[in-house]
Image (cartoon, rainbow, N blue to C red):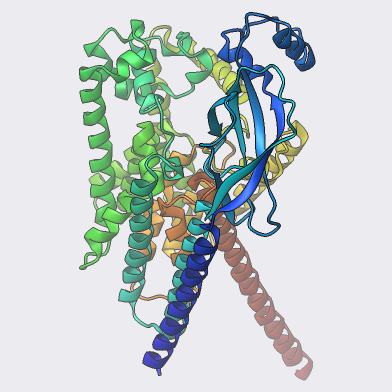
Length: 586
């Protein structure tokens, strides 16, 4: 029966792919035929004409009509740029949602030169002419061909992949059994995403797959800039890039300070640091340490079987890890300390438990929100460890101030810097987790009232999540809920998403699973995938998935606890009625 259903799914999918392929081939053949159109809608491109004649800095007080008159009455201007578009005699085969148009512009009048279309398949373009005005309404007999738009091909390609994934997940849900399939399915899904990502990265040569990182000369800037800020041991008052950039607790600057001793970074630009050999060597050492620390301890949590190494490798190529490496941000180190704490906080060995508490203190001193993992200790009523952990955390937060100029006087400056940062870095900033940023992405509403309302909802949900984390029985879900809320605070950077990786590993290392776990498998795969969808960055996908996971866990916790309370109330009612009947019987 299983074999028949599997073959049926495969046949349906193959038929689906064949139909799409044939449709694309037919559309391409029909579009490749030469057809006749005409150029029209000629309009002087004022700003490009000024730029062509090195007059772009002309009086900015003139409006477009004034600038046009200036151009037409200036005898020194001899070349003009005109904007145009191609139109068609055929009502069907023209530029539309399916086709891009490619006109043959080799046979144009002599007064037209240097013709360029605006983009691949665009019906709009510009040409240079020595004529001040184009009197013709149109230039006729323009041959053109059509090609199926690349975006349509990619969209259909993604559709085929999504259908394949859906069919595979349906098969998993209804016909698959056994723990091994969960880990194998994760490897298959992530491998599929990575292979497609890699192929498109090569084909597009700098296309939207590069959205997986913040590419450009800002590369590794979080590391390089800190070297410039701390070179004089006075980071909170340092004016490079403005004081609003100096918002970390001092332990973050202290960790990177040794790397700042090899160059006079206070007098170097970001470009000079990025192209300096010693700086790059420091970067390699730091990132290598972060990666090794993170994955060595993450692998300690991983169930050891034939899929173990592949799972770790695939996680390494997740969008969050790639972003963390590209930024060289301390959030990667923070996630490493989160993993170490989760491994050791329940250990029977006192030294290992202490290491776990130190790791939590370091994570909290680097990025404050991991301190919420301390509720794991409160749930077990380990008050002594809470006291020790609190002392460690407070020491790691405040004592490093003494290493830098101005000592504890840096604290009010840090508070002031944070206020400035909050003004500069708002919901419109890219690459963020959190409800407020996500609502801005979809509504483009950044008003203070709206943002404050969403933030209030976020804080309320975080508070509810902390309370209900006490009632979650499955360990991996408890860890997932607490680590998820560490990244849901407003304006949390996307590179902090590694905090939930321990929960993913714990999920994949379960001894058994139920069918509803397939939904978590799919969501975790989407959260990690490096593949970029056109017009939607991995930041948005990751943020949406993290909120879905958060609400799923929270709703499940509330529902189960409510049912438990109802059952207890029913039992109490039965006991009370039995007692009442016994008393009446007497």
